[in-house]
Length: 357
Image (cartoon, rainbow, N blue to C red; front, side, top):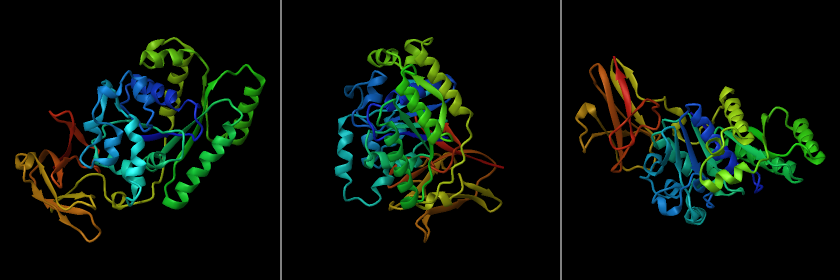
C-alpha cells in the first residue's frame, strides 16, 4: 500500500483537482484507492458530488474519536474508490488537540488501526503548513506537490522542501517528494520559462506527466464527477490517465524511522511450533483482548498481556486451518493494524486473517 499526501502551501495550484482525478484514474486501472479529504474546505468531497448533509462521519472523526476508523467513515464512489469526506468542522481539530501530546500522529495511528485493503491512499491537504498537513506528512511515504505556472511556484516548492526537511530532522521521517506541473498552458513564453527552471532545479523529482490547462476540470467538478468520467477523451482525462500509469510504474522504497513501537513489530501474527504469537501496539489502551473464529467470536475474548515496552501480546495454540480475528481494545473491535491479510466481513469492514499449518 502506498500512502501519498498531496500538499503545497500555495493555494490554487490544483491539489484537489489532482487528488480527485488521480484517484479516479487509478481506480480505473483496477487499483483499490482511498482518498482522504484532509482540507476543511471539503472540496474533494464536493468534487464527487457529496455534501455535508450526505454524511455523519468523516476525517474529523478519524482525528478525534478513537473508535471511529476508516471503514466506519468512508463513502463509496465506486467498488474501487472510497472517500473519507470532510466539512468545515475539520477546522476545529487544531484547536481541540492544541494541548494533546503527539497530536501530529493522530491520523497515522488511525490508519494503522483501520482495515486498509487499498493499493493507494491519497490525502488531500489544506493550502497551509498546519497540524492537518503535518498529520498527513507523517502518515505518508510520498508527497505529490502540484505546481501551477505562476511566479510564486518555485518559492512554493522551496517552502515545501523545507517542510519535508523539518519532518526528517525533527521526526526522523523520510518522504519521497514528487513534483507535478499542474494546469499548464504551455504556449506562453513565461510558462515555458517556469518549466525550464523546474526541470533545471528538480530534475530528479519532477514527473514526466504535465497536466494541461482545460476548462473541463471546472465543468467536471461542477457536475460532481472526475474528468475521466465527465469527458474520457478530453486532454485532462488523458493527462491523468498518464499520471496514474507513471506513478504505478514507480517502485517506492522508503525507510520509515520508528516514531513508536509499531515499526518494531512484524507484519501480522507469527506462527511457530510453540503456537501463534499475536502482538498489538495500543500503548494507551487499558485492556486488549482478542476474539475470532477460534473462540466462536466470543464477546469477552482472550486477554493479551502488556509488555514492558508498552506493546501487548498473547500466544495461542491453534490447529491447522484458516482463522479470522479482531482485537478488542477498551471495548472497541479493531482489525490487526500490522496484518495485511484481511477478509471482508458482513458489517462492511474487514477481519484480520492468519493461516496455521
